[in-house]
Image (cartoon, rainbow, N blue to C red; front, side, top):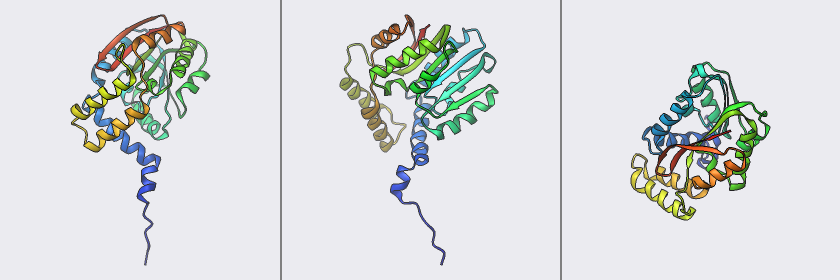
Length: 241
């Protein structure tokens, strides 16, 4: 009799490929239903990039599967694209998503702050980060801006898409408000998926107010900033070198 070895359900739940596919499927539902306002933010960021002269060297920190930025970039405007993410499986998908653009691509499976610290001085025209910076403590956010200022060319910019606190809002108040919105408004997700999202927010979200982020950017010499888009806690900002 042939015995078929079945993967233990516990092993499946801790397997990185299983985790990636399951969480990424949930995130794709979030995007397709515009629950984090990707459509409005994409339009605003694309408009900004269209106003900048190429060829551009672009650094994408926390790029994930690059599906979002692949819809923003004009291939004729990009000389070099470098993306980094902690998930090798996300980067495999990113490679496929970026291939049709026909641009030079370098993908790194590394922590974004480490990548920034090793980035060449005055090399990039755009540093882009979408929904990643809020996972870092404040001191690492300062390092992020410091290293962005070092690696950006003259007139370069940081484009930051992220969740942010309302001015004067505390993190506990943010967690209550955001998770309340997920529970009542994110009906496109299953109850289990909403629970996943809420747990992630409670454990991983450490957002700042726009004023604090502006201060951190100013400390790094990025003294000019302007808001590109705001939809509830979801905002896009540009910080100029």
